Image (cartoon, rainbow, N blue to C red; front, side, top):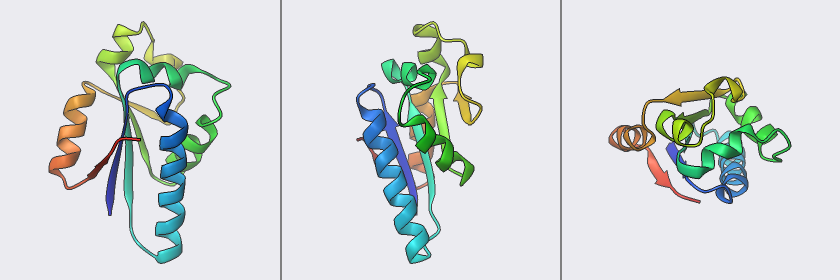
Length: 113
């Protein structure tokens, strides 16, 4: 199972992290191989530089298990965020919309919390 979460608004982070944790728990319990990726663009990229954000620990835990957390370089620039401010588990991609399209072509199911 391949799952792609798209986060483009700050309010979606908590739900996306919770959904991803639930998916990970389910797949592990049922013995289902699952690849997951969260792609952040737009204003949501600001949520990755908020040190007190409650969802960051969940994202870090999921990243340790293999989930990719990708962030749009264009959105970082638009929001004046230096990629060095991001947590170490975050991967910068040139364009979030391209990443989403590529993952869908690879068979990832698109989920927008």
